[in-house]
Length: 104
Image (cartoon, rainbow, N blue to C red; front, side, top):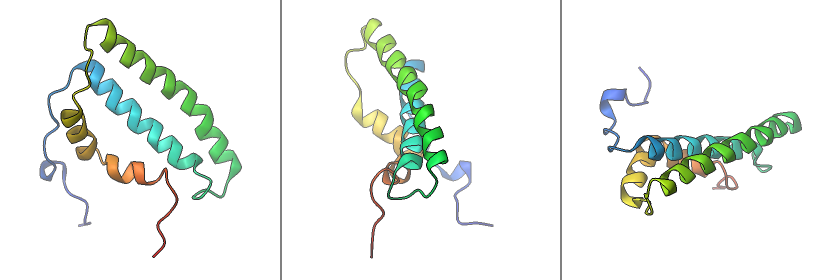
């Protein structure tokens, strides 16, 4: 077996509204695309171009999820809860692909 934890080994996701789930999911999808666009990590312009094209639709979905939250009167982002969700969904590793690679 590999070193990746089984789903039962992961902490449970915190309770989120559907709009909060959409924000978290779409934010992570955009991060993944930004990681593919990252010129310090890529070697293929076509792959970067395709990721950049996909980023447009992710930005629209993210805007729509945040608009829905705002229209429903959800005026605050519950950072602690959303942070837990991002950590459970591997957000730290995914965000790390956006910056330059670590040297060392």
